[in-house]
Length: 373
Image (cartoon, rainbow, N blue to C red):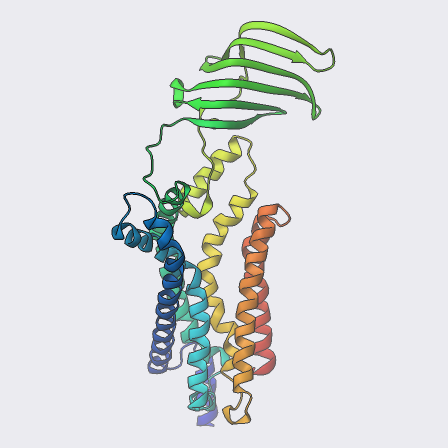
């Protein structure tokens, strides 16, 4: 009776043993970060072999520029392969516990499969928090700096003149195109302006002007002309005021790369782009993936759990490890596929960012319950 009561009490606590939780969590963290270090070392070396020649071929570049590239590329590699390291660290930890019959001892003491995995979940949540902070503070800045450097093929980055070209803005049914935009706020000036006036989604006329600047009630167009599509004639209008509902900041919104902005800045940029009438579904998928991506570390112990249970002497431990790896890599494939479909507009932002996470969480839980619980 006392033994039964002890087993029942054990099952009511998510962490029945503090010592066991610390032991398993430490094994998991050490193995995961050791694998991450090895992967980053190998992959950074291979990447540098391909890029160092391009960097040093630019006149004026030296070894310091090679190390600059390493400093900018290293955070991206860590971000990409941290979930893989957590998956491999999970499987290696669980295989070790299984081979040493420690899992059998835990289950014999009354612990359920979820309680055996609980320390891994807690440690993985800690890794996810570190990953999110690392991505927000370091990876986004390194990605933006490296992208700007690669655009000039590792030469010296020129100063930003503030002039933007070929800017499109939506004004209700109408579309506005400016060949170039200079200045900001009340001092903004548009050059080569065309307003495509549409009725019911069909082009009715084109209003053009040499330049435009914001005034009370809209935009003042100089040397304005209107081309009437049906009549096929051009009407000279001189200086007129048009586009009353368009704000100056709608023209100064640069093209947004979600990988180069932290969560809060990307969310603000999405709001500005929505106000400007630009499509933002792909960016919304990237925004929410900034949360679901790091949280994938919490999913890895569940997908790799199949390697923890079953007798090591049965000869199927290696097969179980392969199954766990296959589940983990299948998740990464599904995650990248969903993001690609979100970029194309085939998936909604929520489905693109959270769909694979929810699906594989259910798959991992189903496998764990059917095989062990």
